[in-house]
Each structure stands twice: as structure tokens, then as C-alpha cells.
Length: 196
Image (tube, rainbow, N blue to C red; front, side, top):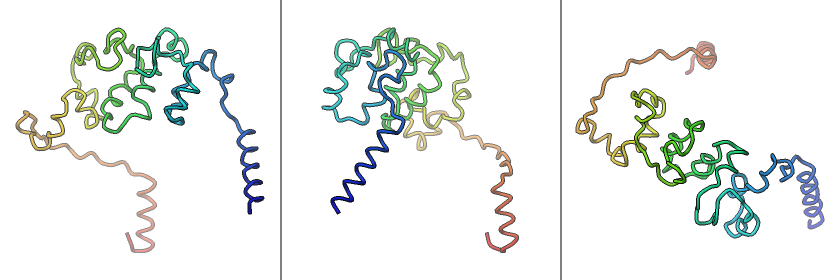
């Protein structure tokens, strides 16, 4: 039994070693210094400190969330890392509104909303500075996810407060659903079997 396990383990190692793996040499030049976007989710905090402490994205002390050296980072990746690191895969569902607000703004400089060197909270929460109006129309498809970004946590009480906050429910016209292949197959199945 032990011999079989050793053989299987050896085969697994050979497969993993021979597969395509990303090494620091395969990254774009300079990326070997910027390891966190790929590796921080895979390592414990202690391993991060010992293996990745040579990261050069953040100035001074990366563990205290000091400011990022944007010139160095933007040469490699543009503005995407700000969003990937600060509202990326590791973000909790409680902050879904932050993801929904940041993703459409990947082509906008972080400093446009956050000011120079401010990562945590935006200097301006005034979307009207860039978007001159129609905020609800702009975000029509994702309004439910981003309410908190503009309206704060009070929006969670919205269902109870609709009339009190001045929002009147207007009946929405039902749009006809496009006919799909699934509908055709379902109809065919129903006509052949007599069951739904």
C-alpha cells in the first residue's frame, strides 16, 4: 500500500513539474518583484512575510498598507492592480458595492476619485463631478449592488421606507422574453410526452 502511494505521489510530482507553470522568469520584466496579486491567497501570513517580503509595490511597509509606488506599478500593469488588489477576488460580499463601483472605472486614474496617495476612502463621493446626471440610468443593470456606495447603509431599510424616502413604485412594462433553443426543446418534449 505504501509503495503504491509513493508511486502515485512520484507520478503526480512528475506531471506537476512537466506542466506549464509560471515562474518569475516568464512574467513581464519586473513582475517578479510584484508577487502578491497571484500568491497572497495561496500563502499563510507567515509564508507571505518570509517568501514575498521583497515586493516593491508598496513603499516603506507593505504590512501596514502604506501607499503604493504607482509609477513602478503602472509601468507594468496600468491601473488594473489597484482594482485587483483592493477590490479583487479576496473582497468580501459585504463590499460588493465597492467592486461594482470600481470595475467600470478601470480606465480612470485612482486619483480622480481618491485624490493623490489616498487608497482607503475617496476624497470625493460626488459622481456628478464626472457624470453630469442620470446616475441611475448609467448604473441601471447593477443598481441593486451599488446602492450603498451612494446612499449608505440606510438603503438596506429601503424596502420598508420606499414612500418615506420619496421613491414611488412605478409599474414596469413586462418585456417579451426572446425565444430560445431551450424553449423549442421544451415545447417539443411537452408535445411528445404530454408532460411539462
